[in-house]
Image 1 (cartoon, helix red, strand yellow):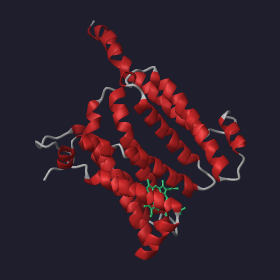
Image 2 (cartoon, helix red, strand yellow):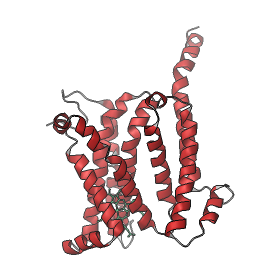
Image 3 (cartoon, protein in one colour):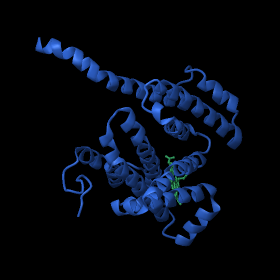
Image 4 (cartoon, protein in one colour):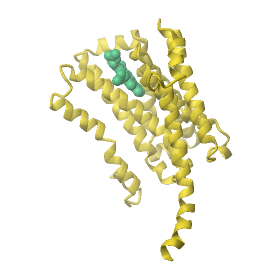
Length: 282
Ligand code: HEM
């Protein structure tokens, strides 16, 4: 049997061996907190939140792998994309299973809640989408499906939108975290719609940072305008300054700036090393 950290010929793949154990950390921590009573009186509910958060986080991480591999000229990163995507599915299945536990295994109630409550319906559709991607992730499926495989796996983009919408709706009045997630998603999608020749250019990274930050502010404004009775202009005004603390749009901008700086460091590193090497040897 092929283990996840080896390739088809049985050779160790370092990047896979390094990433594989990290994927278990949120699950192991949740189990530890549950066992030690750190989750308070409602451990099932707390773990539903936790597994939901990690589902969407791993989904975004899997979408970030291609841009990172290209921008940082680090193609080995692509070797862990499938692993991370399947991890999103695993946390999603745990999330739904805990919901079933929370409903005392009353499967008919679970089914009727999924049909009745819109945020559960879209969560469920997103999870079905992840299942479809998961079961077509084997080497055989990739070979058998040919070009259709790529087409099918583009479903990850609308799945992430459904997952984010599920997150928004259940968060009700405070949508700071979903707005942050949505802003990062916009960054990832904007990078994808860039012409291929631009995707690896450093100059696009500051522009993406600003565009994703503005998009996050706009998404937050639209949410408060359309889905709540909170004045969206006051929320927008808070994003125009840092006097009231950092808003999600600021965090999105900061993440984009961090990417720009890291890509710059990565690009200048060989140049600096070349400049320093005569000093060391001399
Ligand atoms: C890809 C699929 C899914 C993703 C990414 C996802 C993600 C999330 C996230 C991020 C949260 C909020 C956690 C927090 O506020 O800290 C959440 C909450 C929740 N999700 Fe999901 N979810 C998915 C599918 C489902 C499904 C299929 C169900 C059940 C049918 C479900 C039921 C719930 C429930 C009950 C909550 C807590 C709501 C509350 O008590 O206010 N989710 N989910």
